[in-house]
Image 1 (tube, rainbow, N blue to C red):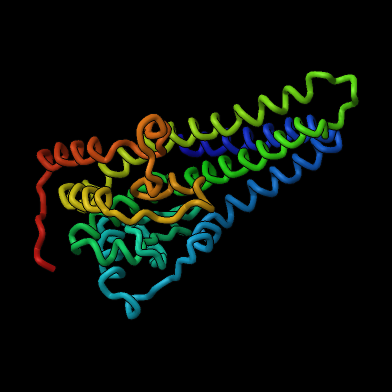
Image 2 (image 1 turned 120 degrees about the vertical axis):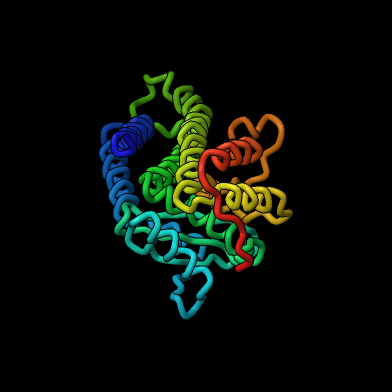
Length: 290
């Protein structure tokens, strides 16, 4: 199912780029936009893990570099019966985590320094279980494509907005509706991208919580970790990369009121409630003091 979603999103990105390219530069602009969209899709598919890790300046670590984190990731990967993913640390005080990569064989799990300092080992295991679940569910690629899609739409909206203001579309002066069409695209396109990210991400988080809890047998530890992350006063600075918020285990953007309706993550309270219900259904291995 995720494979089908990926194909649809890639096609949608190509069509959207071509449409805006046609409005701005006619057939020539459409061809240029087609080439750019294809290049963006190829780059995203083959190098999504490297791109995201580079954005957050994540560094790969070995067992010698960080024994505790490496041990936890290896334990959960073994329980999930997948190859050992790359283990990375993000130099940020904001507690958060994410997984990336195009498939199980090319995946990475990244956590921030703030998360490592905040969580007990069983809570860290719960978080890693959640991220490993994303790997098993093949969510990482679709999440990265969704982020690329949102970022690309933001760029297109800016182009369309300036094109509408200065009349810079290339189909001739007889097209009186072109400027209005560009202005509408500039307003509607970002909203469509936001709704798309919201719809995709919320269900992915619920599924990853459940599968992660089953993998580690510690859903309560994950619930405890989510509570701590939610209450942390520190938020990751995503002003430059808001489109990647959907990749994180918890929303790093502080939306309130009406804006929370478009959050890429479901309410933390609902996630915690579902995890406690799951704990009643499976044996729970409690905190061992390690």
